[in-house]
Length: 306
Length: 247
Ligand SMILES: Nc1ncnc2c1ncn2[C@@H]1O[C@H](COP(=O)(O)OP(=O)(O)OP(=O)(O)O)[C@@H](O)[C@H]1O
Ligand SMILES: [Mg+2]
Image: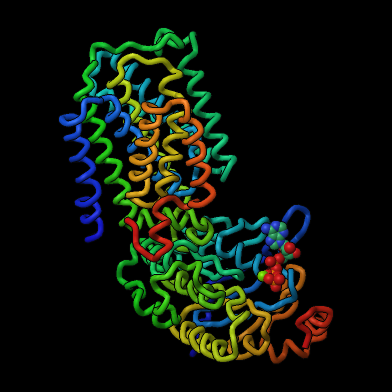
C-alpha cells in the first residue's frame, strides 16, 4: 500500500489544505464552497462511472434527497446540523437501495432510467400534498442552522472522505475487482467476483457522498426550492468535469473540476454572452479529441497517472 | 497416473434451450479427478453451451449437474469458482484495460475458496513465467495477441486453483510448437489431480492429450470412449463427414 500513502500525501492532503486555507485569502466564499461541492460530486461520479461503468444521469437525485433529508430533520426535529447531514447521506443511501434494480440495465438504458428516477424523486418531494413534511414546491428556509463557515469545513471533510474512498479504490483489490466487472462481468465472475454485490456497494458509496454533499449544501444555502437542489445541472456538471479530467483515476476528476469549473466562472464573470458558446465548444472538442479525458494525454505517452 | 474412480463431475440428462431450440438435449457424461476428457463434435453441437452451463453462466432447463456430490445446476458462477470450477473462453475475455498482472490479481484476490487457507494460491511470478506472460506483465491485456490472451484466460482460471478446468478451444490458432508446449502443460495439470475437459476441433491435439472423448451431436452424446475407437464408429464418421472437420 505504499502507493496509497503517496496518493493520500500528495493528492488528498494538498487538496484539503488548500481549500481549508483559501477562505482566508479569497473572499468569494460561495464560489469556493461550490468548488468543493463539485469536487465531491465529480469524484462520486468517478466511483460509479469510472470504476463500474454506470453513467448516472440522475446523480442529482441523491444530492437532492440528501438536501431534503437534512431539511426535514432540521425543520421537524431541530436536529443539530452535523447529525442532519449524516441523515441526508443515509436518505441518499436508502434511495440508492430502492434504485438497485436499475443496475440490471446497462449503457444508455441505465442512464435514462436513472434520470427518470431523479425526476420522480423531485416531483415526489415537490408535491404540494407533502407540504406538511417537505414544504412541497414552496421551498424550505432553515435559518436556525445557518452557518456557512462550518458548512464549508464539513464539505471539506466529506471531500477528504470521498477522495480517500477513490484512493482506496485505486489501490485495493476491491477497486481492481470493480474495474474487472466494468471491463467484462462474465470474466469477473469467473475470477470469483460477486458482481452484483460489487456493483451495489459502489452504487451506494457514490449515493452516500452525493447525499452528504446535498445535506451540506442545504446547510450552507439554508433557503432553497426543490428545483434548486434537484437541478440536472449538478448531474451534468459533475459528469462533464469527471469525464473531462478522466475517470478511474484520482486526479482526473479533480483536474476536471478545477479547469472546467474555473473556466466556467471566469467566462461567466467576464463575458457571459460568450459563455454557452465557449463552454459548448470546449466540451465538444473534448468528446471528439480526448474521449478518455485530459489524463489520457499522459497515459498515451505511457506515463502513469494516479 | 491412476485416476480416482469416483467422478468429480457428473452431468445427467442435461437440457438447455434457447427459445424452442435445444442446444443441449439430454446430455450425460462424467469426468474423474486427474482425467483429461475430450469434448468433440461439429460446430453448433453444444460443446460451449455445456461448458457455459457447468460453469454457471446459464442455468440448465432440465437434468442435473453434480460436482463433488452436490447438485450445482443454476448456482452463480462466482460460487462455483469458489467450489473449484473454472474455465477459459472460446474467444478469450480478458479485462482489456487492465494490465496482465492486474487481470491475474483479481482472480488471486477473489477466486480463492472460503475457509481453504491451507493450500496457498499459485504465485503471480510462477503463473506469469509458466504461461509465457512475464514480458507483457505490465502491459494492458488489450495489447496481447490472441494466443497470449488465451494464456491469460488460462492463468486467470488457474489462479483460482480449480479442481475442474474447462478449456474451450484453447489450442485453436496456436502454432505447432505452441501446441506441443500447451499439451505438456495441460497434462502436467492433470497429473496434479485436476480434472480437465478439453473442447477442441484439432483431432491430433485431442489424441495427444485426452484419456477419453465424448462425441456430441445436436446436444446429445453419440459416443464415449477413446478417440482411436471413435474414428471407426459409423455414427461418429457420419456426423463428422458433412462437417468441415472431417478426416
Ligand atoms: N446464447 C445463445 N442464444 C441462442 N442460441 C445459442 C446461444 N448460445 C448457443 N446457442 C446455439 O446453441 C447451439 C450450440 O452452440 P455452442 O456454442 O454450444 O456450439 P459449439 O459446439 O460450441 O460450436 P463451435 O464448435 O462452433 O464452437 C448453436 O446452434 C448456437 O447457435
Ligand atoms: Mg464453441
